[in-house]
Length: 295
Image 1 (tube, rainbow, N blue to C red):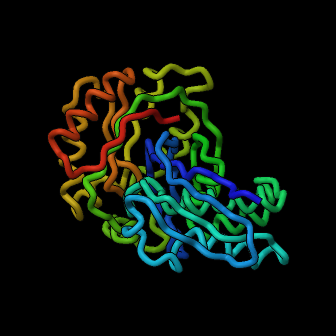
Image 2: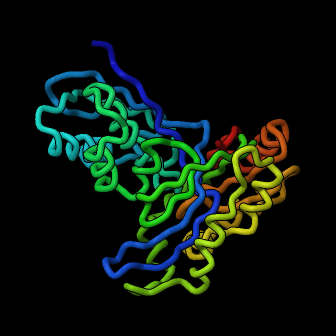
């Protein structure tokens, strides 16, 4: 049987509000999530042994294959479903690691979709969803890879239908640890973030299906990313990336995604996004830059 292929698309947090920290230590969030048109590539060749081969330009940044979320997700699903058919995975890594765009989670979600295809499982199979949550907080949203309003610890998803958004993603090629950023936020167990009571009011006010790009940018601009300030204190280069994006011609909104260090800007059209990406890449040749669309 030939290999099955899925893409692990980059996840972008257009907004990210931290509601508070639960007594179990996890953080409750509210985040508008979209997906970019850049992705890792995951291939599954059916066979008797579960394995993973890392390849691609950023494979070395992934660390040991045995610690990869692709294998973690596959093993958890095998534990949940006796007799699960699996095989050997290949991961072509092109997205930056520890970058706030859910690359590892997207890869794990792609692996789960491949196993679902191989075993004729629907994507709403409860066992699949339980494994996604157990693998990582961003894996459930990456499983469908569709724009949504994400709440809870990442398991509650309300579909959204934004227009295609011309965009530029930039990562300065410095890893930022998610745990470190949340710790820098400084919330104690059971503590709410000041202003969190307004979160659900905003969550219900996103433009409806058919809303224009201008309407969406206006709504997103009223939000924020609560992790941007603590992440920038940890890695000041994030401030430089946001400044470069904000200064580019045609940028309507510039912000950090997730826990950083990847940042994005939204533009009026794809031509402006391409020109901005070219200039930023020229000015900062060591940065990872991608021009495309979010949807």
